[in-house]
Image (cartoon, rainbow, N blue to C red; front, side):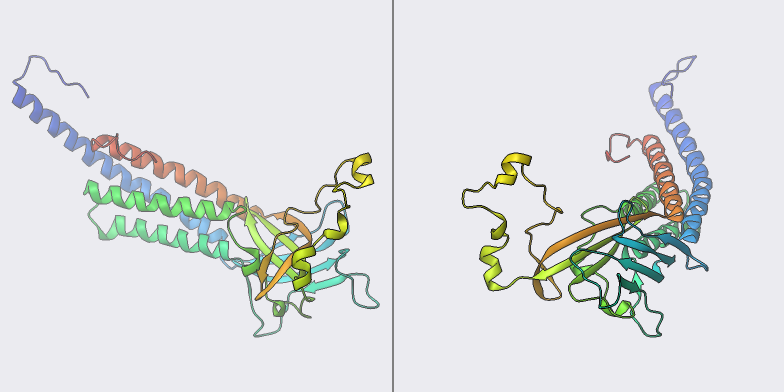
Amino acid sequence: MATWAYPPLPAEQLQKEEETALSKELEWLLAALQESLVSLREGLQECAGLLAPREPGSTLVLSSVRSESVKGFVTRIGTRIVKGDIQLRLASLPPSRGANSTRLNVSGIPGAPELVLYQLAAVRNLINQGLDVIDVSTFTGDPLNASFISGQLRLLYEHISEAKSAIKGGADVSKWWELSAESSVFDPPTPSYLSFHLTIADAALVLHLRTLEPISPNQASSAFGSELSLTGFSLRDKIFGPRLPPHDELGEVFVWQGEEVRVKEKIRVESQDPSLIAVLAKLSALEHEVMKCRASLKIVMGDDDGDSDV
């Protein structure tokens, strides 16, 4: 705002007029932020609705694109997988006698363990916490207290950002060897040494299937030794070049169900979920809106050189 006036005013009076104008501007902004909070509440409620456990849910295809390795579907209602029928044809997982494939069928037996998508459960909880923050900012606290509203906006921003990160997922979101589905989730139970792990990445449902082999004391010192020649190079490597590893976890050791194992074969299949894509888009827009609100309030409060995250 301008720092001069005509006719010129004494310095003390000019400073007093500036403080009065800033106070009125801050009061106006705080009132406008209450309207923004109403809009933010509606956006979060839309996200919560998209994650609500409503019938008939979302049926998603989980099939490999260029092979017959994985063919099937799952049905998601809210944060749970309630139905699923997947046929597997993996080189390292021979089917039972008389069958052409290994079938994984999500159990519908009462009392069977639920197949929960923990990332979506975390997103839903964070959205609910964000709604609580807005309710406190609107109905409980002092809406004209700039410091109070600033703190509430910061808390709301953190909840929305964490929810967005959870639904984007990524390689470091979960540990498959700890969060693989229980064998009893399926009817009949999954074969031994088969890991079934569902996660969320970029608002898509991602299935990782891993066939595992236990490590014996002898394997620890001679694992994969049969694939190496005495000179370190095979004739095939000289002609065609070195072979690429079959997957990115080759040779790594994991503790799965209390036992050290290695991954023999790994398959990744994903399915885009329109509801989750909508949630991610809404959370990104809400995050940006809260960021603008925080930046405006900091400037009027004279704290525009504060935190660098807005």
